[in-house]
Image (cartoon, rainbow, N blue to C red; front, side, top):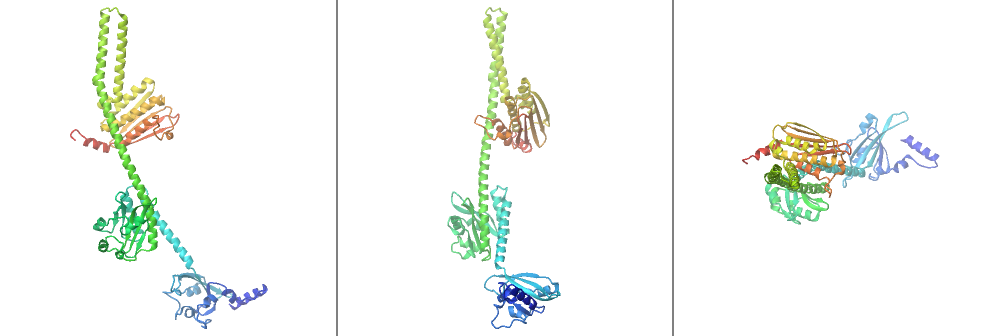
Length: 550
């Protein structure tokens, strides 16, 4: 040290300064001193000397006696002195420890020991530097807490994402929260929008009696206050708090430490989450901060689940109405087809026969009014055309082949009768259709095929169309493909006011109503492909349940 001091003085004189090693070291704010391998103090800067009693001897004394007031080298509960480690290894070492010299506040000190060597490289002393790292430690702890909070929020988000069942979301969220803060007791209370009452929806570690009776309005009890103000509350011991509702239940349950946080969605309280402990002062302000953040996230998840439930209810109502509408439509088709067959068709057939008989009689008796015979023949021709049109209409309304021979024959006949007269070539292939399917499935697939063929007639200008129906014990797949004009499917997102898109929409909805799916692929100039998939297992069971005796 003397040589280094001399070197510093020499360098200072060259620079026009009168300084020494002591001057330089005293200017350092951190505490620094030098000891030999036997703990004898060789040097100490001003920051280190300021803690000593005035007049206390320093140089040559043991460092642990002078600085720590100990009889032996430092060891727990202070810290393990690293001097021996440095002497043996010849390398610097660092430890961070609470500063036991400051008993008032929680401060931390970083202790670094450096080996000092002479000009021959021999270690003859060790420099010990003590730095106050309390601020760095607090910043590190804050970073760790924020990381913990973010990790907790991420876990809640991961646990509840993709879920729409409200009870499942709340249960998973509560279990995750209890695991994160190492607790076993808690619950989520929902705020009824009509009654403005709070009641438990899910819970853990609470008795059924407590959950049943612990209901409160806004402003009542701890949870009621949280719901009213939107601010969290933390209690060291809820059993001693006069604001608590139903203190008898709380006492019986043995609840002490308590946190209550609001569940918010768009600044509106939708519920409250309570976390409790049987030990007082169990929770910290940091726990409350974390739970309050989770409460906001969970409130949004609750709101989304509620919106999804409303959408589901609306969708179910819509599907129910659509099912009734399609059923009523089908029943009306059957009724009209039956009336056309039993009345209109019979009357037209009788009219045609009578006209034919009248014409034959007139011709046989050499009736001289040829104009009248001509008019009768025209009337007969119109009658015959009307009979054909009525027959065609009856097939449109309810093909008899669907009832008599089944789905495959009905689709095949309808496609050929509709398309081949216009020059469109029809190829059809059917597999696994020997057994009849439930009537609802057959009608659905036929109506979808009918709609697809109608679109081909009206828009496609196709030259060729292929139809394939594959069925097994599990499902049926109907495919209809043409080589017509095609269209841009991406532009057809809704039904226009002029009705454009209604056909495809109806086909998709018909398939969905029987638990199936309908996909349409098309490109301008490359034709159109429609694939319908319908499951049979559930439908077969329903068909058996709806037998003649049900």
